[in-house]
Image 1 (tube, one colour):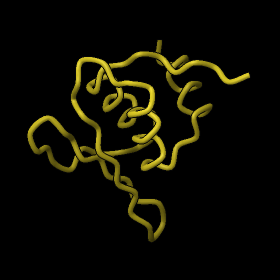
Image 2 (cartoon, rainbow, N blue to C red; image 1 turned 90 degrees about the vertical axis):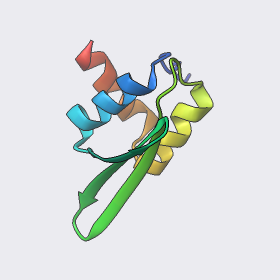
Image 3 (cartoon, rainbow, N blue to C red; image 1 turned 90 degrees about the horizontal axis):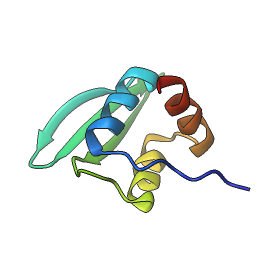
Length: 81
């Protein structure tokens, strides 16, 4: 059975991606922050909306772009709490 994703703000997700997954904030346009990570010769880019609370589908979309597995994200979140 899949564990539920926590309800996090956009800022909390950005902080977790930077701290635990090695992303850096590249730029911000309006209420969206672009995060970048280099893995070998590949560039991984994800965009996080700075909403007070991200819906589960939005968070899953951010993680998919970031190429982060749901379970890996949950483990990092639990370690950080």
